[in-house]
Image (cartoon, rainbow, N blue to C red; front, top):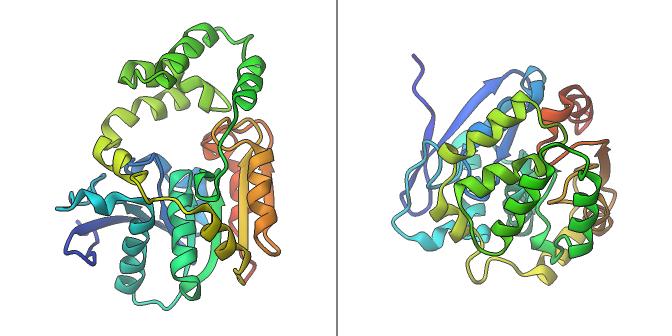
Length: 283
């Protein structure tokens, strides 16, 4: 049995990553924040075209818990990405970040643009550029799902969660609102969060100082490399109209919007996602 690959971060914390697939390597940073990379799966079959290097951020999955909780902060997690790049022995990497992991990828682009070959921001969290869904965005999203049989329970759980009652029960009850299709696969994916998530890593991600939107916007505007920004058409976390604000910041960035997709688009229409990601950037 091949041992799980591990490497040592700047502060001595031992981190793990998982390798699956064939083709040019793509370093993948999960979100959550604070969720193990296992929720990414094989990104809907993308592993048939790319070798996916799935990083378990510190304190999640098979990576060790750091001695200093301050190292969970979004901007500081970029140092772990660079430690993995160095461990791989490459000068530049193709990098994908999903959700809060896209926030880490943006921090990496700020700090190490010369070490990036390309960047994919998949249904990205937008706090890094100072954008978040508004009450109107959420109202529109709820209205669009009011006909669903699960809607009343999900809406009540979402309100309780947003009011501070962040329990496992409320997260699971609200979960249908974050998927484009609430089928058996989505149910299993949502239920797995209870074993994949680290509350300490989640809390540390957004600690004071984690976000400097002005600096991030300027850094993104200076990027000179292939960038793909990917939105789900029915994603309440990263609504397309806000994702397009991110696209407008980055020179020559490509934009893809997957119709009807939620925050985890590889579950909703994997063939669509793979079709748009497998050859990016064109080689």
